[in-house]
Amino acid sequence: MAVKVKYIDKRHWRRINDREYTEVKVNNNKFKGIIGLVTMNKVKEPLEVTVVGQKIVVADDHYQWLQILPENKRYSITVMLDDQGNPLEYYFDINIKNITQKGNARTLDLCLDVLVLPKGEYELVDEDDLLHVLEEGQITRKQYHEAYVIAHQLMIRIDEDFQQMQDKIMYCYHKIKAKHQKRTKMQQHRKNTKPTKGNHKPFAEKVKSQNHKAQTTTTKTRVTQNKTFKDFKQMNHR
Image 1 (cartoon, one colour):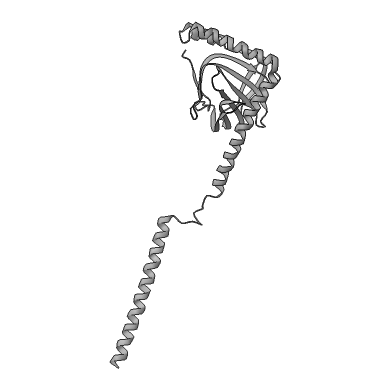
Image 2 (image 1 turned 45 degrees about the vertical axis):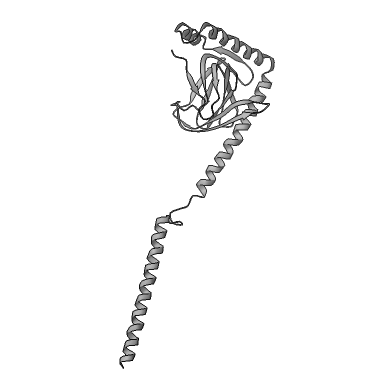
């Protein structure tokens, strides 16, 4: 098993038939890193998972996944939101590295994960996967121990002040949501103002039409001139 590279825009996830993705890079005293928002317009089928003994649908039509990738940290956060924007689950990935490259933001996954419910209940998962990549030589023993250290630090923070963590997460959500809504509004505006075939002719057709009118006018002028000249000759002949 090779260490997974995870792109936060979910570009390789086949469950999604139709998606939108919005991304912003933030650098202020509240957050530094990449924030992404995956909007699932249409999925092949809903995804149901079990978290701390509870079954939850975390992916369905019109659901969103908020992706938070902090700079210089060894973890990333995915927040699963329902079609009303309510958080369903907080998924903390422990990573070897976060690559905060705009347009290609990704993580080198270290397999170990902390799953959290909105009320703060959590569990540590995928320990078998972490052990497996160690035994396969995909990670070092140092990285193996670091994964547990980072996971336990996160769990301590969740125990002590999960509300503060949620507040920072919601700051990120409102930041990216504003950009997503602005982008959607602009797309809708362009769609509404798109010219129709009946009202606007292509440029080449306009030129052709104008040339035809000019030729018709010239022909009429020549006919009038010829008729006048003919009448003039007849008058002189008389």
